[in-house]
Amino acid sequence: MKMMLRKAIGFSTALAIAFLATGHVQGVARRAPGASHREKLDTHLRAALDAGSGDSQRVIIRVRPGERAALRRMLSEHGDRIVAEHESIDAITTVVHAEDLETLAGQQQVVSVSSDAIVRAKLLGGLLGGLVKVVVSVVNIILPNNADTSGPAVPPQVLRDTLGLGSTWTGSGIGVAVIDSGLEQSSEFDTRLTAFFDFTKGDIRTTAYDDYGHGTHIAGTIGGSGALSYNRDYRGLAPKVKFTIFKVLDKNGAGWTSDVIRAIDFAVANRAALGIDIINLSLGHPIYEPAATDPLVQAVERASRAGVIVVAAAGNYGKNPKTGEVGYAGITSPGNAPSAITAGALRIEDTVSRSDDSIPDYSSRGPTWYDGFAKPDFVAPGHNIIAVAAKQGTLYKTYPQLKADNSNYMRLSGTSMATAVTTGVIAQMLEANRYTNNYPYHPSLTPNAVKAMLQYSAFPVRNSAGVEYNTLEEGAGAINGKGAISLAKAADTSAPTGTHWLTTTLSPRTTIGGDTITWKQVVVWGSVVVWGSTVDLNQQAWGTVVVWGSDNTTFGNVVVWGSDVVWTDPQSWANVVVWGSDSIGTTMGDVVVWGSTGGLSPETTAWGDLQGTQTSGMISATSIR
Image 1 (cartoon, helix red, strand yellow):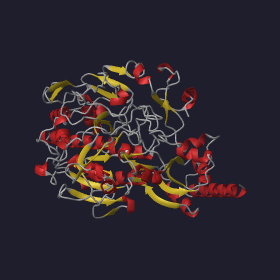
Image 2: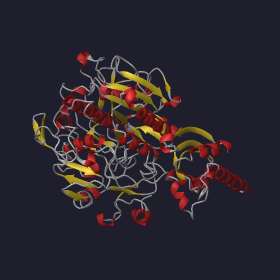
Image 3: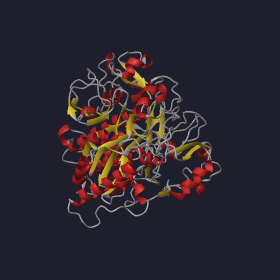
Image 4: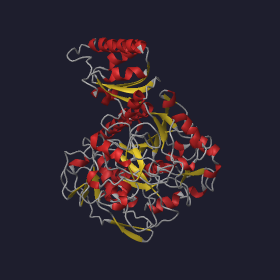
């Protein structure tokens, strides 16, 4: 113990000297008052401290602007291994001793200390059987292994038809960055691979490969050409998009948050040279801290502000793996990023009609942990989706039952697939908009505008009893590809802010499979549901610099969250997930507790503040541990 104390004191002194050397003398290297400095540590790290863990911790340390060089010098002198630097957020990824965490957090120059959490592909764990055990051994988590994977596979032609997509738009001229497990090159992607970067081995540009198989399936869903199928029937949604592939996941579908951040930053910095318009993130990790300090969320927010559209998976934690109960608050990071377009999963069966669509139990519901954001933004087909397989990948080699009738393709389920479907639709939206807008002389659609159009044109989804799912389950509703593309095509991006920008009058309904369905015509803006003609105008809210859900933008016809949307719906409180001290399915972090609400009512629920005394009271009231 004395040795540990001397080591901590030495570390603190070294840190003080390092920061003083920068010349920022006033207030430098002081410990934060009391125990409040622990709030700079995410819940995973706090749990490690409380448990008395002596294990080294791989962390992402953010400091104030101008202090990164001092932090680097101090870490090096202390013998800590520096893994990566993140200039865009003034951060360093490093491995530190557990006993040094509090000392680090106590320095005023340190903004936050976050776990370099393991991210995983948002692939349905229950579908993979034995592979779950392999992944668990790598990432030390439990995946939802009791999820329902029944039902027929969904061929790409059925997927296109149920989305209302014809052959007019193909994603031509649109660039997509897939940050995932890689890509197995084949005639499916012919000459459309712009570049391949392997961030699991640094950031080297190399020959494309995919030793897991998830990334190839994602890319195929977005824009495979169908060249390996008869008459190209198995083509993706946008078969002429160009891809930039960033490999951040290994052969077991696991990787580091810091590698994902580096990939996002690289994609944003080189978006013009690589032609990147959309980033697809079919991966994530449990939420360990508020969005404002989560490094991965902040990377997504920076990308959105730069005009890159980021599509993220909601997560596959909607169902208790032990009891089968469906619950709430299972959104993962970076699906909790306000400006991300976050997709939950939709089960569409092997039919074109939308009347039999449903939300599978495994799809994560909102709200987001800590911040209480309303997520997902909407749901998209993600159950039993067929796309091209990576034959050299772990999935294909280990699980032959996943193969489609054509063995060049396989079926997978999860919000990963819903994310890819959303990306494919967005690629068509951008192409249609640019075609009518004299691009690049007129700007492309912003991320906020794209999200608003997808939400506004969405369809309601109803369960087997005919009751519509609530907003924390379906978001704004089910994605309507045909409707969203018609809105994008009609939007004049050169119209001044505050003026009408739709060049044609659109009927808010779409006919699919012989059924004419009325759009929901809502936009979920943070904690507010906005009804009415929100997308008719080129709103200030659609600007790139505006954070989705922020208070500095107002709409008319506003319904304040909680008045009649979720909390007054008794069905949503029957067997629900409330907030507790266990992470999703495991024993680390602060995420959810499964089971009944223990008599809690909507009025006693701490909406928008999932920390603090009220939340603690809720935890004890549930008595579910």
